[in-house]
Amino acid sequence: MFSFAISVVALFLGYLLYSRVAERIFGPDDRETPAIRKADKVDYIVLPSWRIFMIQFLNIAGTGPIFGAIMGMWFGPSAYLWIVFGCIFGGAVHDYISGMISMRHDGCGQAEMTGIYLGSTARKAMILFTMMMMVLVGAFFVYCPAIILSGLWGDKMMWVVIIFIYYVATTMMPIDKVIGRIYPAFALSMLFMVVAIGAVLFVHRPVLPEVWDGLGNWGAERLGLKQHLFPALFVTIACGAVSGFHATQSPMMARCMKSERQGRPIFYGAMVTEGLVALVWATISSYFFFADGWREVCAPELVQQFTTASDGLVHHADGRTLIQYFDAPTVVTTICSKWLGIFGSILALLGVVAAPITTGGSSFRTARLILAESFNLKQTSARSRLLLSLPVFAVGIALLAWQIGNPSGFSTVWQYVAWGTQLMAAVTLWVCTVYLVRENKWYWLTFLPAIFMTMVVVDFFLVSPTTLSLPEVPSLVVAAVVTLACIVRFVVWKHNYTSK
Image (cartoon, rainbow, N blue to C red; front, side, top):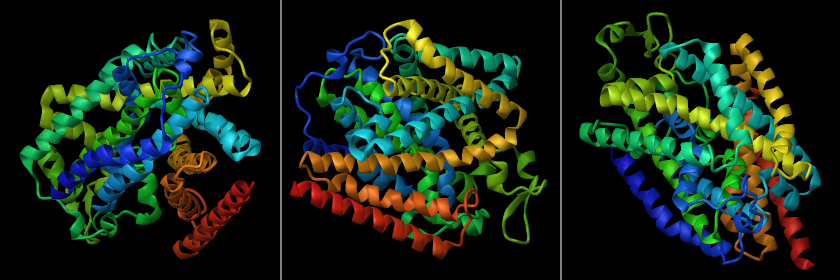
């Protein structure tokens, strides 16, 4: 528990101190914001700052800092370091600088920012890539919540239709009509759940592995984890540390802020809040898997079905290991229902169902905005929004139909989404770095995180079993060479740019 407490304090201090460093480097001023200059009562609307914060938090969070943190802690206490340092020096800086750049460019999306600072070829590639990611996320977050809800009441297809109708509303309606009213309530419920779970953690004060107990891959020995700590940990925990998905969501809020000075508490603050959520659930995961917490919160008859096999791992009677039997959603529902009772079950339902639904809705809306920017089409009329939304919905429905018919196949494709999110983070950090150079500002703020994330995404693509599955050492060498090439390319560009 000491590592958890220290990490919470570190995140708090990171916001108080380093966020001001990032703010001073960027230099927000009193210029007119897009929400005022381009007000259209659809996407460009001034909203109260507290509401923007809640929407931003839920948009960038969803279930990411919950499920990702639970699975990331399978690697051991090193997850604490990645959440804290990744959030303060990487993710929150990424969110703040990219969000502020978007505001400076009329609330433009991540793909448009990439084009402005990395060139037209990069812009075209990012348009295709982010569109694919947004529709994939939106489609995935229809069927899974529908399965859970059908277990409580109704039919799966009924819930699929209801959720998709909700997606249509969030994509088409002005941002203050649906998203602006519903999302803050869901965000508040998620925060309440985290605070309640965190309070129970301090009451129980379980003996947990600490950072100083070792930073190796604990899951390899104790849980049968097959992946290497580097780079898998840094891809598994994306939301809560560094996530490129955030750069696709921040422009929505950049179009609703009345002052640039709101950027630090909204962009940087929402990311630090997400880091706190990740810390709580990482600690829950440590308790559940490394302190035998699962024996305390599960029914005795279920516990009796597990035995320690000859390989030293705990297996269920059907042969599955702990991490195969207790996936992240199961851990959430089990802990919440046991520690918080009926009310906890309701909160767990909101976390496991409402969060992905809201994330999916935001993803489809982002896809519409990407198309609108790409073709330079105004979105003031419902007809223009419908024309752009129809192809997005059509592709989403096709992916959804494929998922229903081939659930295992879609799950395989989904494994690439986490890597894709971190690839977007690396690209966005390079965008931010080029921007800071052009503005004659301290570019090391984003340059160092960009180098690290480039190394992570290249190495993961080479070594991961879901991609090329190459040996560990050659993958590291190739990743280092590619990263070095990116550094050299940047240094040459910077020299030429500053010389002019």
